[in-house]
Length: 290
Length: 310
Image (cartoon, rainbow over all chains, first blue to last red; front, side, top):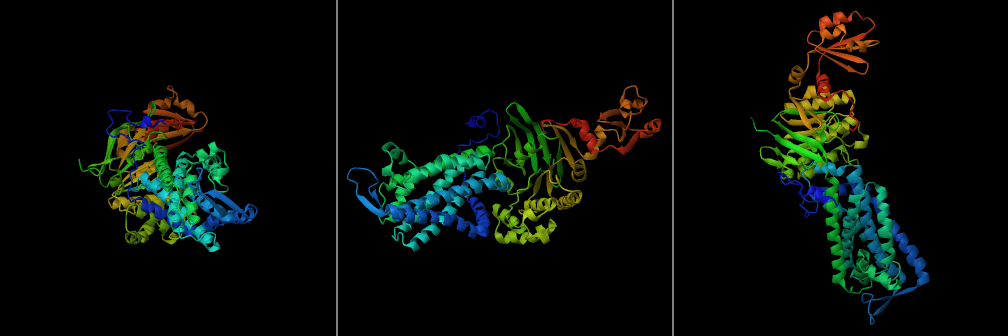
């Protein structure tokens, strides 16, 4: 917004403030910052594991088995959900839900870490200020927070996947491929959450993000019911949601099939991640530039 | 001029219309302790932030270690600095030991090298018995000393301390001063900001007095007092004291300068005896005769009024 203030205001400057929009200046100095978060988390791993896994599993059991008994089977079009001659697949509701909700778990775990926990470190504890007195750039700190949130998300997803395997919900070997994709989902949502972290004045601000973005996306991305149920124009919008792309990639793997439009959906996730990281970094630089 | 560890030239920082730091120049020689003093809002913290590369100046040059420029070579400079900020930034989830370990890693130090430094640094901070305690279990003074120990993890050549003893009780302040004096004996250079004139007088070889972003005085504490003040001060207070400050008062002739603050009159003079004799004519008044100090200098230079916007 007022980035113009900091760029090229004075021609005679011996040292000009670089633009907040400059490309990320990254080095391996993100690693000790990541390690710091890991060390804290190791002390709290068990309670945090319970919190991260118990809730998604309760959803799965309550809705999957409870609602699943009423719904029975779900009919979804296997060819990317569009077109006249799309092949149709009928799947048990629990499998349909599990394949969608694991994406939601990846999203939620990454989001919580990159919002509340990162904000505590950045704003409340001033941990970032302390780190920046050492030879570590803000860019590296933001990178470390992003990767850390995605790691926590991957950890949660792995545990949930293990439970799903144990419950026999899906046992396709293609789940091995779902795993790195879900890490990518964690990365994308960490990047997006860091934008809101950079803008926040307090924890209350995050309510907007949840209420206005995450919750609607949860209901529109085909976790709980196929997007075919949505009005056409709404469905067209949902094609561009990052959570939709994640589910379009992950759900077929649960069904032992290959995703259609994989390149497009993967590209969409990567584009969201890159743009969001760039924006998050710019806004964080602006926040720290006093 | 010997090789300066830090040299700041014509530094300027403006926020909109407000010039916070105005054409400021100073330097620090090896082994020297430079104190930056000034009222709230004088530009001390902004200057320190610019020296740390956290705020970009609008003009001027900051050079460390004969040739490294801030902020262009910020990382190379910070690798050789130790910083204690005004607010503690210790990790609340870590013990004292872990705080040092994790901080050392930010400098790219190997765990083995850091671990070898933990015991001596905790001892230096008088924190050996608190190695396993978290910051929440430490007193204010202990936290500050842990921050200082943490700032020393990378063997810095120079320390930047922003109000290192603000909020500490007298015992904790004295212990902190002792530690800082120990560091100076080891040849470390220190740049510190402070509100406490006794701290500045005790620790600093040289002082920089800032007001409204400008340097208004610079020099050794004793020299500054001699240069700007009469050697003696007689403070007078009590019923009718204010009347003595009038031009027509017989005491006025004995003082080089008279100041009033609240209910107290300050007589600055080179010869206190005649003034004290004359003062005996007002037995109901109370008085205090003392040598002029840095606080008098500070108040003379920056005024006695409270800064509303600070």
